[in-house]
Length: 99
Image (tube, rainbow, N blue to C red; front, side):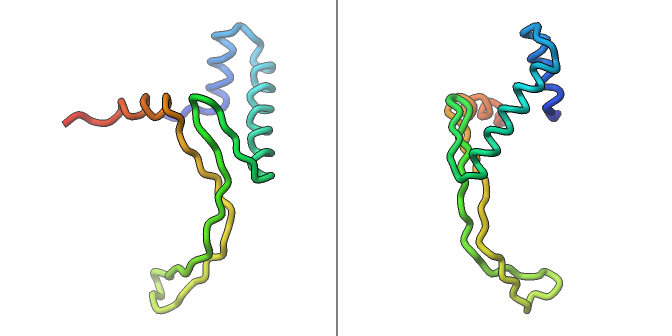
C-alpha cells in the first residue's frame, strides 16, 4: 500500500477536525520548505523521523550492457539521501520476517 499526500491530508483532517484545504496547505508548505532547503544544500533534520541530506556522487565510468566494450562517463551529481531516525528504524525492523 502507498500513502499519498491526499491520504495524509484526509487522515490528518479526520483526526484534527481541520478542513482538508487547510491541512493540504500546511502539508504542501512543509514539503515546499523541505525541498527549498535541500535545493540550497542544507540538511533537513526531523527528530524521531530522519535526516535528509544532499550528497555529491563522484563521477564514474559506466558500461552499456548492449555494447560492453564502450565506456560511458557518468558525471558527478547531487543526490538526496535519507537516514531514518531511531524510532522509525525500530518500527520498520518489526517488519523483518521471522525464521
